[in-house]
Image (cartoon, rainbow, N blue to C red; front, side, top):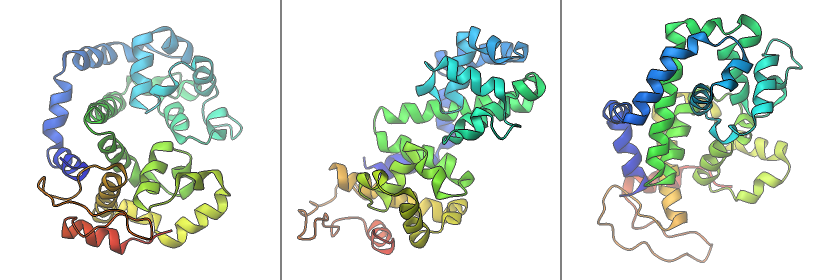
Length: 264
């Protein structure tokens, strides 16, 4: 199946996939342990001492790759977010600030973690991330698309995109931007992005959907995967003289998506 087919199948059947993830024995155990114990935690020190809770939180806030950085995480959580000079407020990646805000050890001693709505929200996020990780097993691009879909409505500027490697990957792929562009002048790149795509469109589900359709098609084009709505597509032609793959064999709706987006 194509990236687009895989992604759309999950989105159309989100509740079924969500239930499937929650029914996994390991996920059920992790959720049960988190719900039973997180309300007892009142400081970063206590959280880091409980490895199960700590890892659950890191997954839920998309920071699993930083699990090893315990000293950094403790400093982020201990300093909170009220002080403009707090570490969370000075980091490029907004996920650290989000975690410090929700856990609120500095501000409330973790009182938020006794609120059922907050606990549920963290569990739901854990399930979302677990689903995305599962999708990656068959197609890494589907995890990127699901992640972008979840994050996009809260994106307010292009610097947030550039600070998140996964968001950046989706945008660079969809708009056919060379990876090395990230090594150049950041302000100039952001100005280009502003001129070619209205970031406010990510808050519009229909426009976001079209953007992710384009990402899915472009990802398969660049990585030699299938493209389009049918698994029996004719051969996609060779690279043309301008260095771009032929799109004559792509599903018509995807072809229009590719043609209508601005190029760099």
